[in-house]
Length: 116
Length: 114
Image 1 (cartoon, rainbow over the protein chains, first blue to last red):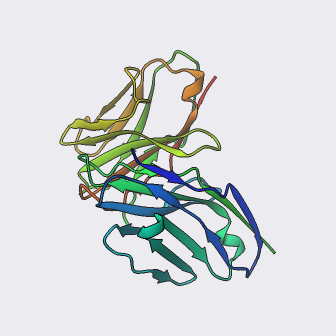
Image 2 (cartoon, helix red, strand yellow):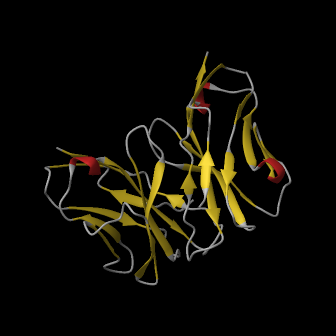
């Protein structure tokens, strides 16, 4: 069975600080996909990134970067120079290759609070 | 960017009543999903739907739940006899490829069962 663990329930930082959100996953599949979604206070789920299990290259998109380490089953997310608008709940999710559709298993989320 | 549209944004109902949550997935997508999020908790998979039938469902998706694609554009979730514990945010999502493609989520319907 697949499982996603986000051990950090809540993180509070001051604007311009860097922050890393941890994600650890469990799966028996060799082919799988990892995702990060952002849920701002308005409630919608906003896609941030998708990574497949064969691509361990780290990715950077503006102030966001992701570190995928298969050896430790982790897919951590770093926000550089955080801003108040980054305040949201961030969910890590996993989709296995088995099955007929892209069912996502979500972690419990990390609430990020960025203050001035 | 194309959007998944959900209506209504809020629904209040009495326990035991039937509710229908509506979704318009992105037009060229073939896979449709319902997820729910109880307040303060994680997002949970309910059901996936492809080719006019359920492809997978979770333990949550019991006989009180059903899904339908009544026409070429809408995708609905029906709860026949609502319970207090059905109160949650319900998200519809769609995707255009079987595996690995990102799911496009709607803004959700907040269901409150009184």
